[in-house]
Length: 583
Ligand code: SER
Image (tube, rainbow, N blue to C red; front, side):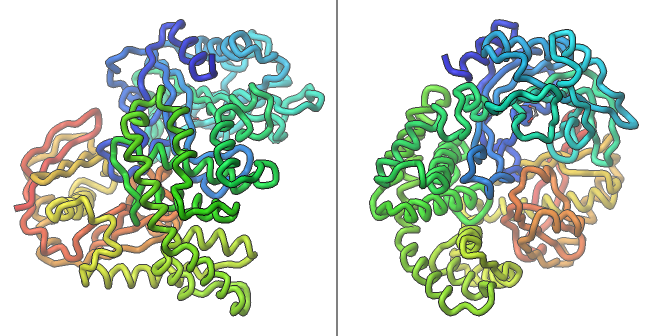
């Protein structure tokens, strides 16, 4: 039995119900790119809504984390991974949770206690030091010297800026043949974290205020790839059984051994696996220039370039055998992989064909550029030409530049990028309109109206109003926002009037691509900041609204017509819902 099966079986035997992984791309939430943790789809239930399957759940959740994108190529990072988790929704708490984890590790996986150490939360002004967990660990045979107390940075867990949260206890494994030191030092990287048990008993609101939840929950997460590698005694995740056939197929197609070619092979393996999962997801993502589609494009194109580095003839459908290994590996666990395999292979093939037409010339252009370069900066025009004419995602050019110890004039690049985007918009050429495809004109209008409504609510109700969700179709928009009371008729008409005023003022809508940190610094509104890629689109409407958003939007507000609220109701505790139309 493999780790995933053993984990699920263990928790099912202990009264948990196995739930299927939620889709990789969250439904009904255009502001979030991917699920990044097992708990994400469970947020409403951690906040108190009853889960239809009960209070004890377990699963393997598909996750994509883009913060690690740059690290891919090393031994331990992956863009896609599976997170094993068990949950108590207001049922058991610290004692049972720690017991379950300890017994699973030591009795099912047979990990010797000597190889384990833990961290617990040292406490702060609001939450006391977690002596309870420390005591439980000691009672199970983890000695005092193997328990470290750490602060908020390490042992307090929250997804993003607000939501359910709590102190956690993390379990570490000594991954080395060296003699195990008596005392646990969390800084010593021979100790690797394998499991995180979060005791979610608080909610943090948008102002940073922490209140107790109505129920005490447990949320645990164990990275499958890492633990499999540990159990199999390999110090490189890509040498574990999870990757064996995938790497073997890359060795075959490149006619080169893994040893000596690790970086490119890991990048190809990781990126093709993630691309298979993204394109198989029910959201139907295709490579494009925006949002998840752009991530998919970047992953596939980076894999193609590394295949070329390995000497693979990329003129053929070289990705297919590798993708088929991925499909074979996961089709029994994830039905969308089985169901959508034709689509996946088609996506990979089409993107390969597309990039291949320009790749060779682009690489030549890059080499030529190197010979003419004075200094160590690639100018904006060259970077833009690689992007525009040869289809090189800017991140790919950056990676190639780094390999030659060069930098790119990124600011200049983005300036050109934006100018070009404006141009092609007005010319309606469709070149940069990836994001516009699949959205009807009226949906685009609703999308912009959403931003105006968000801004108007802040003016009328107060600055603490934040978006909690939205949903748009051809006939109406729905907008959920934090607010502790039912809107009065007066408030509703003020909001309507303000939105209509801004529409009449025909405010311009503009977009800037910037680093996430900078977007936050300038005060851009964002729903789930952790879930965006490092570079984000920030949309500005006149001087009334600034939001991180994938788009698309109208160019001027006057085209929206007339805005009308048709319903205002409760959505969940502390969250109100407005339905509105444009007429
Ligand atoms: N939410 C926690 C994590 O992602 C535990 O599942 O680590």
